[in-house]
Amino acid sequence: MRVVIAEDSVLLREGAVRLLEGAGIEVVGQAGDSEELLRKVRGHKPDVAIIDILMPPGHSDEGIRAANEIRAELPGIGILILSQYVEERYVRQLLEDGAAGVGYLLKDRVADVESFVRAVQRVSDGEAVLDPEVVAQMMGRRRPSGPLDRLTVREREVLEAMAEGLTNRAIAGRLFLSERAVERHVTSIFDKLELSDVEGGHRRVLSVLAFLDA
Image 1 (tube, rainbow, N blue to C red):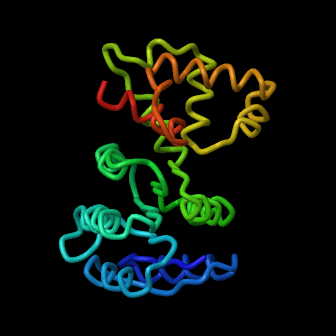
Image 2 (cartoon, one colour):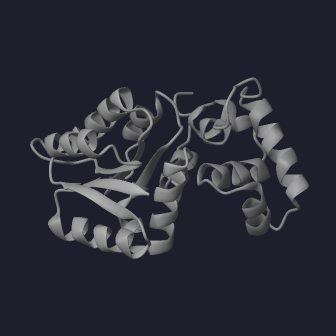
């Protein structure tokens, strides 16, 4: 697997590079700002671009804007966003054109080598990855009413695990359920969130995103 990493903090960038290379992932380019990121991605065409949200020159949303430009121009490249904080608007912006091959990870997760490397690999494989803390905040925000209110407590637990990217088997292990029981809960979630007729393999993350604007 080949990646380009964009992070203006040299220490964090170099640390992430060492972690990735130690896991057998080839880092073909590094960037300290969004313009350099776009040049490196266009030149190397990596499997995944790992991108900080706050980057020079404006330190606002340059990373997200660069990510969207990459997705539009080179849709086969996976995008893994790194952020210091949970920003739902950035999550929505990142996933508004589809959930395939995209991820949103908090920078603290980089210290968890196994989780970080697994997230990069899953994004490269075309999956969607949301940081557990992102999911927890999204799930915990209360609304007057919405599709999430239709779910049972157990279905909410399954939904949260789904959004973290856990397989049915992993969810079963976490919640001490059988895989068949998890499958029933997943089907019920899709039905209640009116995602039963959605095509493609990304309903698991879309089921979380469905209630963001409810």
